[in-house]
Amino acid sequence: MSAPRYFPTTGHLLICQNSNCKARGSDLLYRAVWNALEQDKLAYYKAGGSLRLTESGCLGGCKSGPVMTCYRTRDGQMEEAWYAAVDFPLARQVAQAIHDEAELPGERRYGP
Image (cartoon, rainbow, N blue to C red; front, side, top):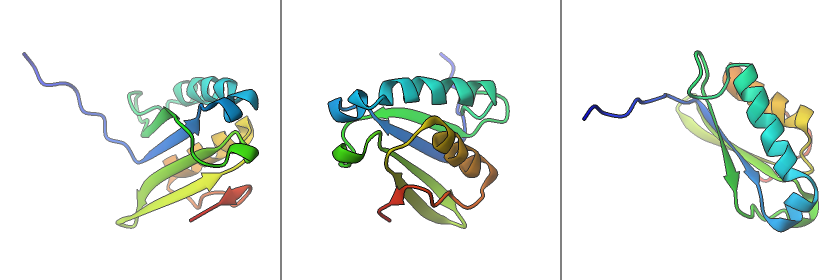
């Protein structure tokens, strides 16, 4: 049996799929972001891609959903960002910033 293929990543996006966020469209947001990552070849298993996308349980911002968090390693340090009231343009902007190793957007960001 051969070993599974390893896909290196630079970042990870998590979009809440709990009931409050779903009521605000997080399931549609997740699908739209997934399609965009594939189309732009940013998904970790695509040529040149480096991002993982995961459906998440509650991220704690229930009244401000959809909520998204991201993690990446930058300059040898773990960086995280939390976003409230996320829409598709913001999610795509965050994904591109992670991929490009650029500053994360400040719009609707909260937490660390």
